Image 1 (cartoon, rainbow over the protein chains, first blue to last red):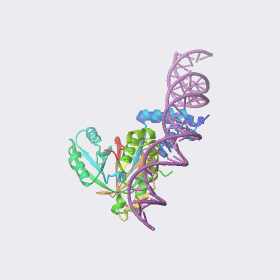
Image 2: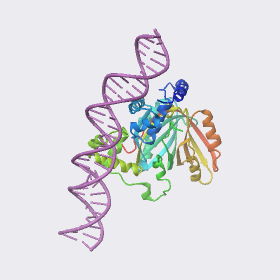
Image 3: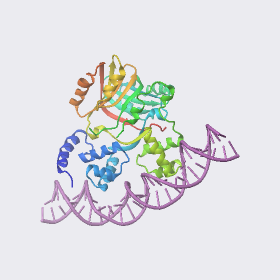
Length: 171
Length: 171
DNA sequence: CTCTGGATTGCGAAATCCGCAGGCTCAGGC
DNA sequence: GCCTGAGCCTGCGGATTTCGCAATCCAGAG
């Protein structure tokens, strides 16, 4: 019962996307479903179906597939300050040797919330979340710098978080 | 709706010791509830209640309060690469004059997912999410650098996202 | 044309969500 | 002591949602 124009356009996007990253294809309907769940992760399937033009069962099946494929996850996110983590920092890391193995080592540390390999004057950027200054100092100087291959680090302690959204996939 | 509540809540508060904790303190039970919802944002209230030792209705009331207070939000999060945003970058910004007004200007840009004021060799760090290289180039060189007060920028283009968790409040 | 595999739909049963009334505890005022 | 109100929890019935499954649709291959 729904728009065939959307379906044909999604075929084009599927081809171009798949050639880039080989990941699972997302058509316009799945994107709309994700958008709904980015507004409210507990929105009922029937309400989502009404919004995107699908039956409740179809939405449920697609959501389950998106979760199984790891395309999205539905989770609670919190403001770190209100749950007792008073010090955050972005840490730029320079590596000699294999960058990926260093990234894996940092990924294994629970204080590292966010690890990304970058091009530029840093090889890695890492966001660390700590309870206080001592904890932060310990993580940066004793844990991160102790990883084999880490040549140097530069820290940017957070003073104020101005914006943090989860609207990936929309716009 | 108001999905940026978490970040915007602490926006206009200063260095009062009390306001640093932002909202209300969380007891162990609320923390346990958050932990449950960080594993699965759609977990039924009854199952959460069984895990934390509360009735279904009590869990429901607490969750609603945590959402209303902006302590947490339940949302779908995705890997930007799999939903069509192929270029991301962290941008360090140096500012002359009022840092906060520059931060507000960047916050208003939809491509800026994440804006934080920092101490260190950058005054601001901004995460930018774009569809392609042209888009990224345009945002950095034409939009960000055009903001009054921006002295210089340095970009770190993302090569590979290694870790992205939402486990704040656990550990 | 037929067949096949994937996606969607409809529907009944089970589970969950929701609002509300009532009970319990703890401070604070009289 | 006694009362009162706020805050939190529990129990419960009805409305809503989720779940599993069989049937249907549809495009593409043979």
